Amino acid sequence: MTKKHPSAGSLDRAIENLEFASLAQELQRHFDRLNTRLEKEKPWTIAKSDPKLAGEIIIKIAEELISVMPWLTILLPETAEKLSQTFADGQVNLSVGVLFPRVELETE
Image (cartoon, rainbow, N blue to C red; front, side):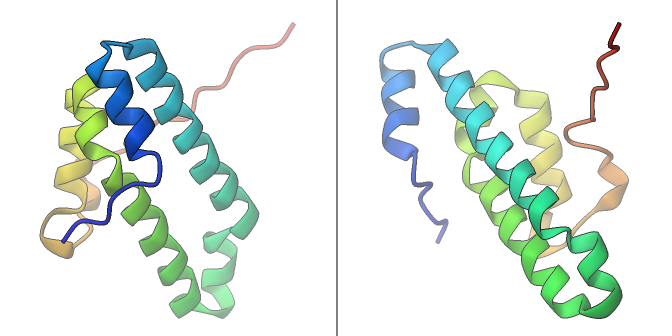
């Protein structure tokens, strides 16, 4: 059974009201929270001393990504498909590629 996302109500309301900008904003907030968590918990550093804990962190992040897939499909169907392929059958398929490439903005 798939765990229901905590923001499911607001995501569903955005769709019902055809408020796609609101849907995009809510999804962006979700991804920002996940990114902040990754930067704070640093599983790539933890993996050196505690691979099991690093794996648990990554699994929780992956579950959070998967939990918003139904809504992500509406706005970014190709990204949602890549996400589905990345975590298909409970395995991580790294050959799918980067889901959300980092964008570096040039500063003047």
